[in-house]
Image (cartoon, rainbow, N blue to C red; front, side, top):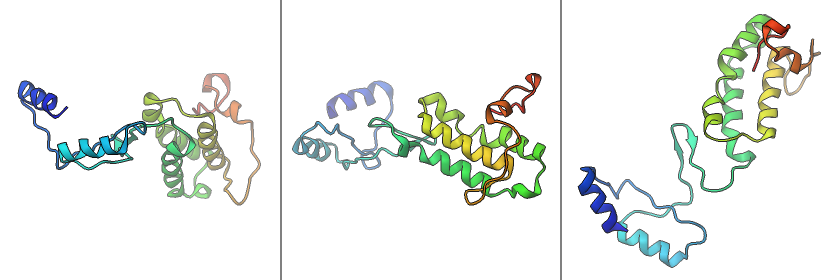
Length: 158
């Protein structure tokens, strides 16, 4: 395997820095084999590949916990704004411009679970109507009506 990588490096003119690299092996790989590969390459073994361009590199089936970073990001963004000081139009504009755009890149890469989409909608709904986790406010219309295009009588939320 290392010889193949060296041939690739010679052909492409690129170089691999094994000191900065990590090796991920399938859970089906024998521990001794994985350790031997690590020793030959001089790179440590890892169980988590981290993120690339803000998206976690998936090495198992995605679950709800995989995309909790999206919920945290939207929650942090909304927490910075005081919904009481914004008008309904201001809150709707903030949702359209900021929080609705956060999950788009992730949604290009993988299909989000229905529960994550529902949680994202819940955060946006509560912010729009002025509610919080502790205290609910009365919603002036159904969420699916607010998500309709403006031409059909909605607020144009996504």
